[in-house]
Each structure stands twice: as C-alpha cells, then as structure tokens.
Amino acid sequence: MPKKPQVQAVLFDLDGTLADTAPDMADALNILLSKHNMPPVDYELARKHTSRGSAALIQLGFEELSNDIHREELRKEYLQTYANNLCIKTELFSGVIELLETLDEKGISWGVVTNKPGFLTEPLLKKLGITERTECVVSGDSLVNRKPHPDPLHHAAKLLNVNEINTIYVGDDPRDIQAGQAASMHTAIAAYGYIPDNQDIDSWGADLIIQQPLEIKEWLFTCS
Image (cartoon, rainbow, N blue to C red; front, side, top):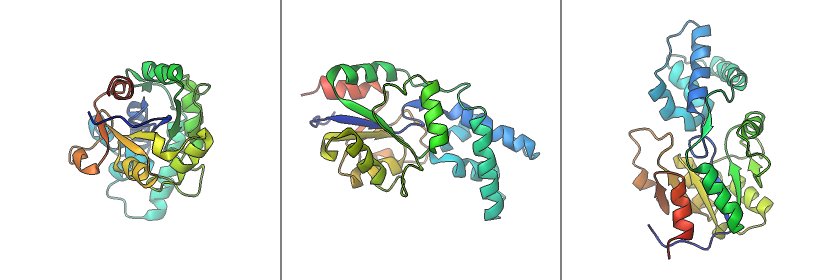
C-alpha cells in the first residue's frame, strides 16, 4: 500500500461503497419493467450499473427507448418505486460498522457524499442506523452541481471544517475519483462495489484500491 496521508476526515460514496443497495435498486427496476410488460433484467447485470444511478438503470431496462421525455418519466416512476422499497434487502457492507467505529474512536471525521437524491439518501441512512453518527451528508440535489464536479466534496469538507488535502474520498465509480482529485483530496476505489467488467480501475489514478472496507482502517492506522 502507498504511504498514508495525514487524514482528518474520510468521505464515502453511498451505493456500492458504504451500502449494498443493488438488490433493492434492481428489484425496483424489475417491478417497473413488469408494470410496463417488459422482461426483467438479470440481477448481476443490473448490479454492475447501480452506481451510475437511476438514469443508467432505465437505459439498461428500456434500451430500445429513444424518447427522452418518456425516459425521464420512467426515471421518476422508477425513483418512486425504489422509494417504496428502499431498504428491504439493503445492508451495510461487511466491515463498515467496524471501520466507522474506529474512525469515531480515533477522532477522524466522516461523512457521505452521494449523487443519490436527498429524499432517498436521508431515509436510507436512517434505516441503516447511521444517521446520528454521520457528521455530514451531501446528496445529489444538495447543490447545483454533483459529482464528478468537486463542489459536493468541497461542501462536505467545509461542513466538517477540514482541509481537502487532509481528506480521503472513497467510491466505486470513475466520477468519484474524478471528483475527489478535482477537490484535491486523496482517493480510494472500492473495488468490491458496482464496477462493470470492462472498467480498468488501475487507470482511474486513485491513491488506493481496496478490496473491502477495513483496508481503509489498515491503511490509516497500521501503515507507516
């Protein structure tokens, strides 16, 4: 592993990084497809598209659709379907609770920066039992710009009162790494997340690639 930075805060993407939301997001897509008399999408295929959000899932399920207005209507319908089935199968990834407890014990601030809209992010974090512990939450509609723009990460650093260069952002999508780098943060790829098979994560230029959440703990507290 590379030499650790002087870290004051750790920021996390949500889908595919903190929480395994793919089962519920894929189920919501298939509920919508069934409603429109369309065949279901294979779960493993849908899982690979989860971090790209609702637009990518609609494109996956309704790939023959060319009407942008209809696609946006379906996206809104999908979001409501997902909201109605928000945390049935979703769980925090293994090791996340231990990692967050360690960050708390060591006095390192942490928060969530996601492109998920706030009306989904906030109740999901509450259902997962980490709302009261999270020091900041920046959703996809918290600001005008969202990832890969660095504004959400700058905003999170301001909320935590930390310097960006002393912050690490963890995510499983190229936009996460692009946003982190543009915000002058250290970056880590959650390789256990929702990464399509054709992605070469080594080319993203992150400071660290982790295979499970607790590797962040190992990097911060056991490396010299």
